[in-house]
Amino acid sequence: MGSIGPSELILIFLVVLLLFGSKRLPELARGLGKGIREFKKAANEIRDELDVSSEIKTVKREIEGEIKKDYQEPKKEISGSKGE
Image 1 (cartoon, rainbow, N blue to C red):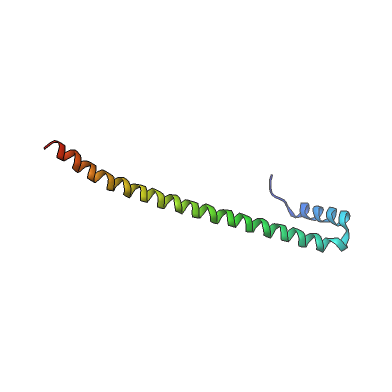
Image 2 (cartoon, rainbow, N blue to C red):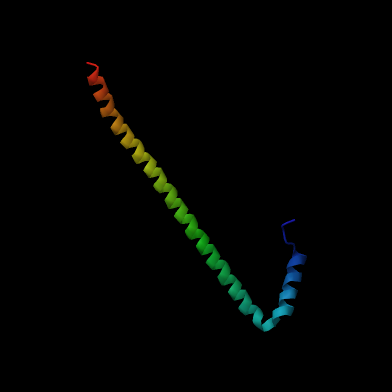
């Protein structure tokens, strides 16, 4: 289930041919191709945005780690000088 075989494709083609006629078939195919192309383009743009978002999150974590590390060192020095 889920896969379309050759016999199903032929049946679909014949139904489309009967419904729309041979004159409109190239027009429908062009429209379908254009729609698929637009969908793929949108999917690629979303994927690219997610990749950039992931990179931004990684950089943010690295910067936060550096800031925490830089903050912890003076805090330790201050704590150590209180005990003296």
